[in-house]
Image (cartoon, rainbow, N blue to C red; front, side, top):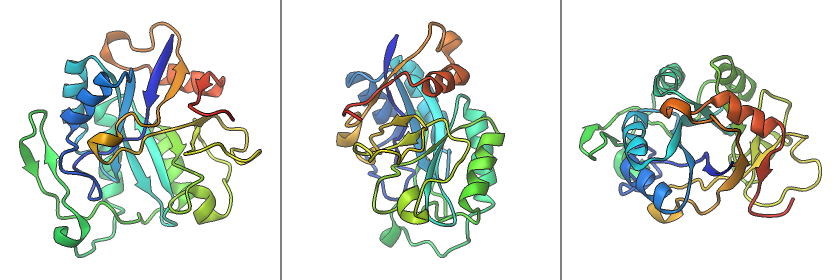
Length: 244
C-alpha cells in the first residue's frame, strides 16, 4: 500500500520551534492532512516522544520516534526508531555529548517538555540546539548501531546539510537521504531520496511529504515494522512530490 510519510517534524521542545507545535497538534494535523506515517524529530532530544506516541495512537496515525541530531560539523541527521524507549535511550546518549553552554531562553527559544494533554512537565536548562561533541561519522554509526534509520537531513540546504558542511555526501549507514528540491545527478550517491516538512510550526505540517509503498503488516500491533520501512527505502519504493 502507498503510505504518505513525513519523517522530519519538530515540537515545542525544539528551541527554534513554535510553542503552538505540541506533540498533540502534530499528531492531529498529520491525520487531518492525510499522513499515514509521521515522525517526531526534535533537535538532539526525544523527550516529547512519549506524548507524541500517545496522541498519534489516539489519532490513528502510525508513528516513528526520533531525533534530528547535530554533528560536531553542524550536519543535521535524522535518527528514527520504532520504539519510544529506543529514542529516549539514544537521546540520553546524545545529552552526555552536548556542550554545557549558558542557555538563555529569551535569546535562544523555549524548550518545553509536555504530556499528551499539553501540560508542561519540564523546561530543560541544557541547550538542545548546539552541535554535539560527536563527529559526523561517529554520530551516524552510533545511531545505526542502535538500530535506527539514519537519514542525513536536507542535504541540499546551504546550511546544516552534509554537502554544505562537509563538501560532499560521505558513504554511511543511511536508509535514505532527505532533499528539499530535486538533486543534481549523482548528489545522492545512489541512496534513496525522500522529502520532509521540517515542520517547526503548525502551518508547516505535511507541506512536503513523500509516498512509500509498504508491504502488508508494516504497522501490525500498533508498532511500525522498522525493517519493512528500511526495505521499502532500499528497494526504491518511494514517490517524491517532484520529479528526480
